[in-house]
Amino acid sequence: MIWNPGAETVPRSELAALQLERLRNTLRWAGERIGFYREALAAARVTPESIRSLDDLQRIPFTLKAHFREHYPFGLFAVPLSQVSRIHASSGTKGKPAVVGYTKNDLQVWREVMARSLAAAGAEPGQLIHIAYGYGLFTGGLGFHDAAEYMGLTVVPLSSGNTLRQIMLLQDFRPQGLACTPSFALHIGESLREAGIDSRSLGLRYGLFGAEPWSEEMRHQIEAVLSLTAVDFYGLSEIIGPGVAVECAEVRDGLHINEDHFLPEIVDAAGKALPPGTEGELVLTALTKEALPAIRYRTGDVTSLNREPCKCGRTTVRMARIKGRTDDMLVIKGVNVYPSQVEAALLALEDLAPHYQLVVDRRHGFPSLEIHVEPAERLVQRWGRFEPTRPEVAALRQKVSERLRAALALNPEIVVEPPKTIPRSEGKAVRVVEKK
Ligand code: DLL
Image (cartoon, rainbow, N blue to C red):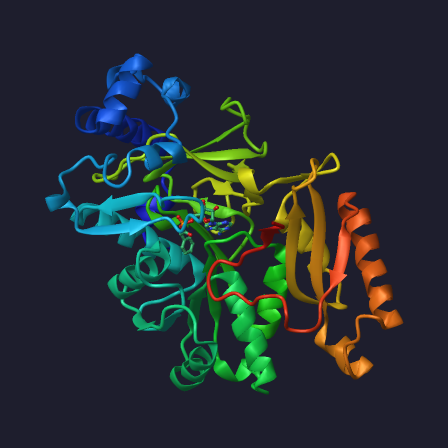
């Protein structure tokens, strides 16, 4: 269902005119009210009037994650705290989080873009949605919650964790939709199987998954263990939270960006604009935010943009599934690799359980990589018992090595762990750990 046809199927020329007008308004608003932007725009000699077309975007300076840290907690807000209705924060693990604020109008914009996203993913008023994203400062729980209520769904606000309770309520309440991180979805699905419950008996129709990188192979695994259609949701706190972009259930080939509110660009490492279709770093400008109008924010997320019309009827640009974050890219013996690429290669092997961890050792100059995997349950059943010294374990290690060499030209150490020892995730999975 297209929630807002006027906005989602607007002719591109009309959309570009609206984006330009909103961009100028945002520059004016931020320049007048936020010290950081006043100085940055003046230094770059950018005034709203000097931006004559979207091609002038590149004259506008970037906003970086570091700027959020420098102005922690409220220094990038454009309104006094008395006008901020809600605070959220990024789930950043390194140092202080990025703190973000929403006015009443911002919350309404968020509901609107999330309602569009939920509808695109297959949600309809009157249905039940089970929300297992974390509630709190993380934007996942409340972002889905507020919009689902607004569009007329019945919300089951479980938050993350407590997998057995999640399963009990999925069985008893029979929601059509499940919203959580893909790694938690997989964990719920596997726990169902262990409990001997046929996932088809739950009657789930769709899963609303995002907040972390995941691969097409992971999608297949989740769909198999939960018997639903899995849809990719993208967003980030600095821009609004979930609701920036989503796949349409009809096509599921790229995520439609809500372009009347978020202006996307793709740049290279030096910040230079890249041509359409080229992979690079996503930069986003919030075009309608009052409390925190982030301008040309460098997301660190790697993707590409596709302006081909989509069969679903939406005219908005689609971004490819996120490959990873620029700072998650590993350079191992000259090979550049994102954890999501390792995931895709590993999950294609039926002999492995869909759980893995990358252990990076940077203590001795060049980084070296170990990949920890688990054998598939059915293999262990056949073996009777897991013994690291079994010849079958050595053979599995060999198979994984060959696969990674063939798919990614990567030659890491493979560690086959006993079943169920790699940590399961209830929120954002930790895929890479540094050896200390
Ligand atoms: O993760 C917002 C969100 C909540 C999105 C629920 C989708 C569903 P942050 O905690 O600020 O916000 O983290 C944002 O997570 O820059 C990406 O690196 C990553 N990310 C979010 N969605 C996806 C996705 C939320 N679908 C950061 N695929 C972003 C890959 C994603 N990475």
